[in-house]
Length: 149
Image 1 (tube, one colour):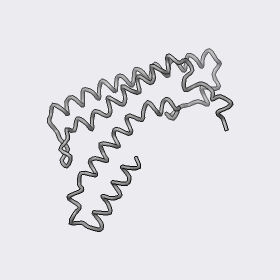
Image 2 (cartoon, one colour):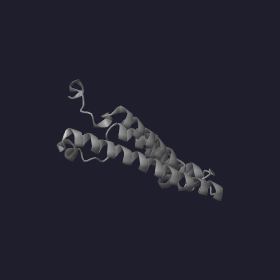
Image 3 (cartoon, helix red, strand yellow):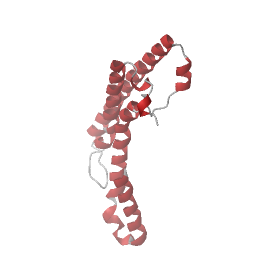
Image 4 (cartoon, one colour):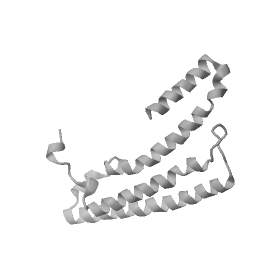
């Protein structure tokens, strides 16, 4: 992310300070777009593992223990099904884009590389849900007292 910010800032500086050279660095904008898509979608599973996805934990904590376990199971199963559904759907879209022959104007890469971030990210998110289901409490577990500062 820092590298993307730095090269994008460089691109803006070139456009403002040396506009005649701006065309030589037109690829930077597309490269940042490709990188950002991959960073966002690859971060889905990591965000889930660290408990950074949107959650209604205050409601979950108020449920009785048995009902809480059932709700957590339902949440993880729903997340798993949704993740693999979106992965399949986005995989089909990615194949369509690859077959269409679209390429990025400045990088001359197949646009399939941009679209591929979504099925890969959601497949990895689905695998993270599988791991959550196997772990039991997983991300819902209370933090250990020694880790709380």
